Image 1 (tube, rainbow, N blue to C red):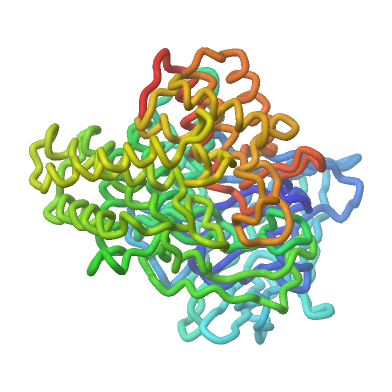
Image 2: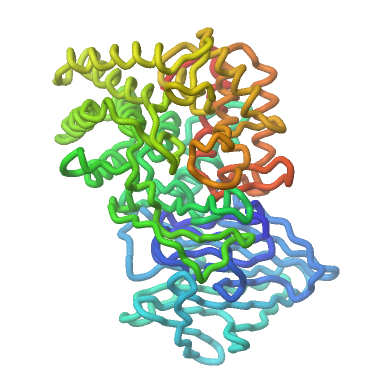
Amino acid sequence: MRIEDYALLSNCRTAALVSREGSIDWLCLPRLDSASTFGGLLGDDSHGRWSLRPADPDATVTRRYDDDTFVLITRWESADAVAEVHDFMPIDPDAAVDIRRTDLVRRVVGVQGTMHLEQRISIRFDYARAMPWVRQTGSAHHPRLVAMAGPDALALRGAAVKAVDHEHRGDLTVVAGEVRDLQLTWFPSHLDVPEPLDVDAELERTRAWWQDWADTIEHDGRHHDVVVRSLLILRALTNHETGGIAAAATTSLPEDFGGERNWDYRYVWLRDAALTLEALLDHGFLALADRWREWLLRAVAGDPADLQIMYGLAGERDLTEREVDWLPGFAASAPVRIGNGAAAQYQADVVGEVLVTLSAARSAGLEESKFSWPLERQLLRFAAEQLERPDQGLWEIRGDPHMFTHSRVMMWAAFDRGVRAVEEFGLDGPVQRWRELRDRLRSEIDHGGVTDGYFTQYYGSSEVDASLLLLPQVGFCAPDDPRMLRTVERIEQTLMHDGLLHRYRTGTGVDGLAGDESPFLACSFWLVEQYAVTGRDDEAQELMDRLCALRNDVGMLSEEYDPVQERQVGNTPQAFSHLALVRAADALMRTEHRPR
């Protein structure tokens, strides 16, 4: 399968990836960053998967989501029969969450004639390290398979299966008008098997919850459907128990096929989460901002000197990176990594990203809590203490740290928002000190971050970086500032290939990694906005249309796109890509520039 061959199922706690061939090849239980139960995405069938498809190898397939939900409808057609598989993960985040179970349902609906389907399931807990002990229970009329290993257990209901070569297989037949339900339930292995679901009730509740949420989205315009699906994906990556927003649903999908640029993105980057939250804020979701602010307070509690740039979904700090050498990787791209060493990096832009978003939430009407402004003051103190420290930058380079221009601008933005909080909202703080630091940074950037009339990747460099397109977005300069226009020209000359933007030139050695990478989708969406606010309307719309066409058939984008092989690249679905899409679509609707 290609990366774009997968669709997403979500219960706002974990997520599954379903291929066009009807195979669930990725599912971590019970949480998005738990160990995988189905890990075939990073290997083969022996590493775990759940396949359900017609016995006829010539059957054709189409698929779609049921309106604005994550109920996936896969329609199979053979010469004399038609059937649908409705896949979903039951969700009701407004009710008490039962952490003792997680469910996934595959409803088979006969549409025409008689369809024979084959079911194959191989359960491999703990990233395919643990082959479970399996037993058949239930009865001939109500078959049930129970598998367990260590702390994890699964129950499969709905159709009989039998063991064949370390997997379980079975047949399923539906006629027109018939409905058959397959239920997969995770539960802690020391507990009894949970009761079966009322699938009709769960399906109705799940449909209603997603559709009701989508119906509250405030957006009108040419790209309405695209924006709604992107915001739904951002919501699907948000844990409804903790408020943590994951960067993606997967780990180790390669940025360079066959290479080493494979990272675990199932965690909460403060930057990505802040930008996601801002996209949600812009479309009416103020309550989510409050929940994320509470998550932030819990995650960064204590000494600001211990601030990390990323955390687990509940604010966990230990994200130690390790290699999983028994998984061969997607398209033989090794190593597969669990955890992310970037958690230990210093990235100077992060405090600015957080404060810009909290400032936007304040302007949108979010009231201060007892601890929210004290948190911001502590973050500003931390930023001031790090003022002379080079960093790894937005792109988390694993080479030597530098004074990255984008990072310095985001530090400027942090102090700028601190000054605004005092001057415009009457909050307390050492505003004169913040004003001095803000002005000092501006002077420093104007001198150290500019050469030959354009902004540079880092001080002393002549290279450019796509992150420089973000400077007008935070108000550091106008989009039509001569330096910005010259920067865009340089970016187009050196970073654009086949009409799409790379993040930076990998051949310079700045990132400390071997290999290459494909154009980074968010960067091209940033260029759409830059074009739109500087009067290059036709180019903006043309690029936007091309980027939207890169989404797969159910609206998902990964991190990058390879225009030569014409395929998506990197972890999926990627929050950064979708939030950049939303902002670009908004920019195309406006008649003037609006900084974050």
